[in-house]
Amino acid sequence: MTATAVLSVASEIYPLIKTGGLADVAGALPAALAREDVVIRTLLPGYPAVMSKLESAEPARAYPSLFGGPANVLAGRAAGLDLFVVEAPHLFDRIGNPYLGPDGRDWGDNALRFAALARVGADLGKGAIPGYTPDIVHAHDWQAALAPVYLHYDGGPRPKTVLTIHNLAFQGHFPGSILHAIGLPPRAMSIDGVEYFHGVGYLKGGLQFADRITTVSPTYAREILTSDFGMALDGLLRARASDVEGIVNGIDDTVWNPATDAALAVNYSALRIDMRVRNKAALQQRFGLTVAAQAPLFGVVSRLTHQKGLDLLLEELPDVVARGGQLALLGSGEKPLEDGFRAAAAAHPGSIACIFGYDEGLSHLLQAGVDFVLVPSRFEPCGLTQLYGLRYGATPIVARVGGLADTVIDANDAALSAGVATGVQFAPPSTPALAYALKRAFALYADDAAMRRTRLNGMRADVSWRGPAKRYAALYRALARSEQ
Ligand code: ADP
Ligand code: GLC
Image (cartoon, rainbow, N blue to C red):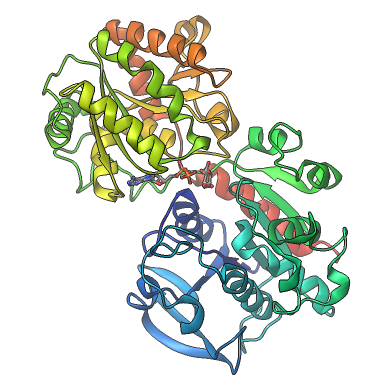
């Protein structure tokens, strides 16, 4: 059996550049799939953070002009990843967040920037680099979603395509006037093409033309076929339902391993779970919380956006404090949410503390120190922080949506008596339901044996990439074998 070659096209990848879970997934897939005889190379934009870490870069293809300036595709490695990088200074030589300018708004030319990424992905898919012809082009999210669109309109022989939806809330919707600038033919501007609410929809186009569509959990795969979760794309997704599959994310357990993690105050494993209390103390100290081993400590690591449902938590905080609980929040995002948590911290010093910003190391210490990690999302395609929580013995409290529904076993009476509970779930995403979940969490915490069992169950749950990698490998193989 020969290995299956996959070109993964992504706009971020851990550890080079990360704004969220997409980076973790794009970064972990290559090693996970290598065990399944799938060889993944990843195509990335040449942001400064990527260019500066690229080792042994070789020019592999030149573009005299790529949407407004010269560009090169470099082949190289960084952080153990095999990469192709689009070196296009006019599009990507910008420091900081990959999508937003210094004013916090989307770059005005994002349509061109990510069309360029997809254009190169399509070209590489068709063998533009001598000696490299992938069987599959795998595009992630709207930023790469035009790759299957270009392959369709180019005509001629092409590789098979997979598009993964990491988050339907981000769709890449631009004015119709860009069609020409991104090199699509006028006929693409139709309901069966990229036309979307009188503009051009990048994700919409990708969903139209990708051979297979995946998303990052089975429950989200079902949810997005409904108008409640489909974000106006549910009709198209329903039309393609037979090509939609949900494959849950795993975690990279070399990066997320409490026994070896250098960001912790003390390393531990399921066998030495009592050592966690030293991370709890270190975390309380770092956040300026009262150092108290007995206080139930809740944690949040999150983008602060409507999706994440943290406004629900804000309402419940006085009650959490009244019951003797503490909250440590690490996050950044929308100002009203930051302001709300800042005010809560000011009102409850020692019990509620927030660190606003992005801090990878601290996110590890937080998972190692908190008793519960809270993820009250309104929708959640997969969610990774509950998986990190499970692995680190931070019991997740989650809304029963998307991947949160698929990865946590609610500590109801049946699960507790069967000894399989790993966390607390609630539904719907509302304050009364969250309040009830918190009440249950306090009761669980007060029951030493049940709490310990739930924590250990979480730590022993298999949240690795092993299972999901087999699903991706099977999908790639079936697709590579199929007729066009
Ligand atoms: P999403 O991709 O929707 O933001 P996920 O749960 O899939 O949600 O992934 C979020 C990733 O970003 C996780 O790796 C999480 O630890 C990380 N993260 C989120 N906010 C922060 C932060 N403020 N500091 C450090 N890491 C963060
Ligand atoms: C998105 C989703 C998140 C998912 C991540 C990686 O950012 O919001 O739920 O875990 O992508 O697939």
